[in-house]
Image 1 (cartoon, rainbow, N blue to C red):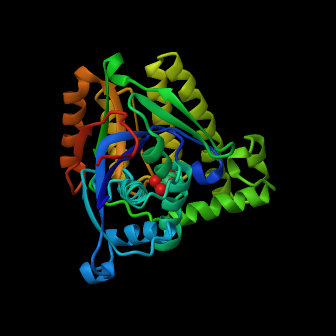
Image 2: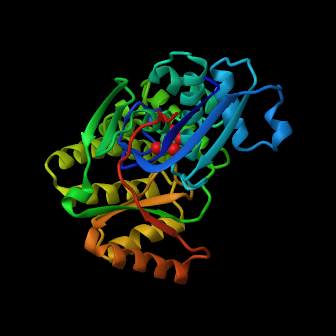
Length: 341
Ligand code: GLA
């Protein structure tokens, strides 16, 4: 084999935000926006920095380093996952490259090993302390399902997720405010959570009880921890609501998650809040920021026949209150990374 091509999806997290690195629960879907990577054995060895300045190549180099690849490879990438939109374009990139390299070189690695390599690429090579949810969504997502990830037990469960079957649409609203994990408050939030867990004598903050919040000495730590503890509860309620097809409750939990991320975890921004308030004012069932926050995208659940009204309201409110125009599209739970050829 001279070349291998693989594609991997971006993701939308439905609920369970900032819980992966806290040993908690997350519920992402893989989305129908993908990155495709073709990997070839190269004739000449050259560093990617000879090709173009640092950027996406750092992620590719990180994967090659994590997989201990020492032969020269050419890597060509194309993508429909928007960059900086908070939809894990980086995990789509690293996972597509990892699956293609594994196939080309016959490494025979399982998905857990590929996920670990992609996390190492981001943590160690790019220097972003990402928590593992995005890579799991890209490697284990499935059509018509959300992926319940338990970072304490290390388990994964597919949960049927079919809003279209219930006459609903899931919309992504990209605020156009670039979300950059490396330069955002992401590391600060992680540090706050680690400190709160240490004060409580816990390995992971998601194991805290609501009563324990009072034992935290600082107001800020109490708020960070309150988000984690209540979000953990919301993920469980969300899965139960899905199992009962209680979409109204699903929407309410999404909105409650957003308010907690806005007020307690403080990772929202005015544009994300504007999406949520506009969508709800136009009759959406629920809305929340998705991913790390600090810009990027929000996700909106609405009746399919309200989609035009909800979209129009969001666009109109942005025209009045924001400096940039949002981009909106419908997403569906899609398939995991796979070798294409
Ligand atoms: C980013 C990180 C993930 C996760 C989310 C917040 O997407 O890459 O690991 O922590 O933020 O839920």
